[in-house]
Image 1 (cartoon, rainbow, N blue to C red):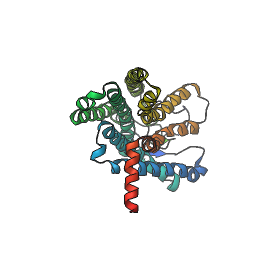
Image 2 (image 1 turned 180 degrees about the horizontal axis):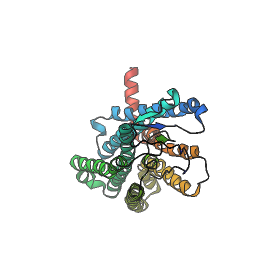
Image 3 (image 1 turned 90 degrees about the horizontal axis):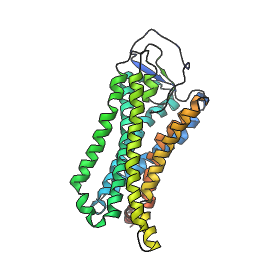
Length: 319
């Protein structure tokens, strides 16, 4: 939500309004290296698909619990988020297929921002689950019933959809008479509306307020949950008990760090790094593609039940 185009770049003007297609340039200035750049991104996408489908595949009745339902939601969100970006990006890198239909561009914009906001809400739900599991372990199964978990999941999805829906609705109303060239790899909200030849302050202000609202509110609730969790952990009588209890939060904390820290870092660099080349901002913006790849690895390595389930599947196949 924080990326903006530098004024004056690709300022070719035309006399069209509401173009039928936009042109995605990929990474401007590095067109000759697009094929080589595609290798790590293709690898990331393949790992994300394999890892998240594995998480969904290994779920069985013995693993059914609030955290694993939320983990499945995260896997689905990661799959949609990465698939919304990667195939078109790779077609640009491999086949120079840069045109994207206006409606498809708005659809991609919605899915990217919607599922990014949804992931943030899922992390809040996971933090609440850890809080209940550690601070109220005897009441965990009665507080977080399947009915309550379903309501939380529905609330997370509806919040993301309703908050992001104005993005494409507002973008579709603006006249585009400057250019249809987007110096980016996908249709990010601010990258599209900055091409409009109209007063887009409504879109800009809404985007900034939404970014601040979602990040600040979600981080606040996550912080409150972990403050209570840490208080409960430090009140345990032995060091081994404290380490073991804190270890149950390790995968969730790692996932939070790789999701929020790049976003906050990018926001800071956007404000203090105006003289940096455009492709630097685009590479920084690729942080959206890293969490879908790392989440299944983190949870697979640090969650004993998932490791045991994977090992049992492999051992069963060998026998």
